[in-house]
Amino acid sequence: MNTMREVFQEKLKELEKEVIEMGEMVIIAINRSIEALKSRDLDEAKNIINDDLLINKRRWDIEEECISLISTQQPVATDLRALITILNIITELERMGDHAEGIARVVIMYGDKPLIKPLIDIPRMAEKVTSMIKRSLDTLVNRDETTARKICDEDDEIDNLHEQVYRELITFMLEDPKKITGSTYLTWVSRHLERIADRVTNICERIIYLVTGVMEEIEVSKY
Amino acid sequence: MKELSLFYGEKKIIDNISLDIPEKKITAIIGPSGCGKTSLLRCVNRLNDLIPDSRIEGQILFNGKDIYADDVDVVEIRRKIGMIFQKPNPFPKSIFDNVAFGLKINGIKDKSKISKIVEESLKDSGLWGEIKFQLNTSALELSGGQQQRLCIARTLAIEPEVILMDEPCSALDPTSMLRIEELMKELKEQYTIILVTHNMQQASRVSDFTGFLYLGRIIEFGNTNQIFTRPKEKLTEDYISGRFA
Image 1 (cartoon, chains in turn brown, purple):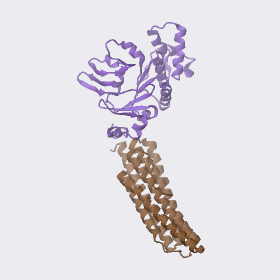
Image 2 (spheres, chains in turn green, brown):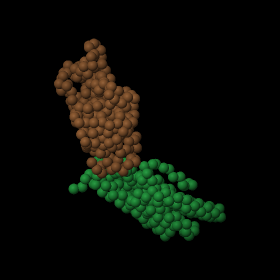
Image 3 (spheres, chains in turn cyan, green):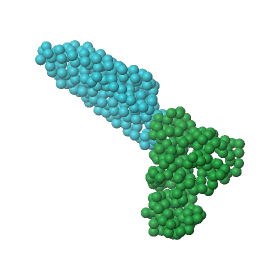
Image 4 (cartoon, one colour):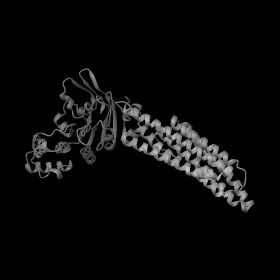
């Protein structure tokens, strides 16, 4: 027969698995939104917006399980920090889902007009941030403070890419005022991706808290 | 406490504990059954003296003086360091007489003075409002929670400086328990409290400092918030997280 604490540890592991799954849902949403932007797929953009409700629901489900565990098991120390960390991570993931939804809305706003330029840096940013999300969630499972800190440093690369995209789009706007709307939309996409990377940093801060018990603000973002 | 050890016969119950108990704070001692919590508490007012074959090494300094020194008056120590036990143990007397008992055996005869102290003690223990019109009824007619607060009033009446509490809420329902916990917080304004408890939620709710005792040794001692959120010792973490009992 399992002891109460074994039951708790099993439930905690299940919760972490659900967080990883939620992260995968967010990564898929981001990738789909960028693909929809590339291929100007308005139907897919609408689907992404609808599917964000599933991400939101997953967040509430996990939150409810956390509340239930806190109220029935009264965890302390690392166990308590793990649940607090999970509660914070799912909030960040849910917001990342909103950013993916935001990109999908840009696709709809863009309509069937052609893109003002081929997308190069934006897909690169998306690839980088999704990798950061995945690895940050791995640090939850592995209780890996060192990697969490390293991932925070990678936010600079995203900031630099965002700046590069922004400058390039400003040039387009200056050269041709007809491109102002299209350029602004792409700036929003880049901004969404940049914010996602900031949220990855928040996740990493929580992992550091989980491992060390110390709340530390890691200021890496220029924006 | 300085390098305190307690032996029952050959068996070492408390193993070389050095600990500063902060004044006018609540210090909780937690630990699994049989780790020596109650024995440690009983060292502090020399109740272990009553156990044949018990022996102490080290010192407990109270107001700068070792309470185990040869010239110490044990009765005076137990007056200054009162104790509340797991199960409320009122005498089969009236409510008034329960509180007045300690005063009378300490030689106070002035009836108006006794009445005044009884009233103040019952007020301080939070019981006065509930029983002020039934002071002459038997203490045994009170509820468990009221009886425990009566025992606290009985302790307060003889003006202790330290109150030892040995699982004071283990026999009480949750409402009575919370009432006692509130009382502890009020009492720490005037008294130093050492609380022994199995109930870790209680330790985390009421105490300022917590010591984790295991196999007669203090494994970790520190600020309660730190102990329950980021203990330094793995053994403490395992115990408070329920990984062993």
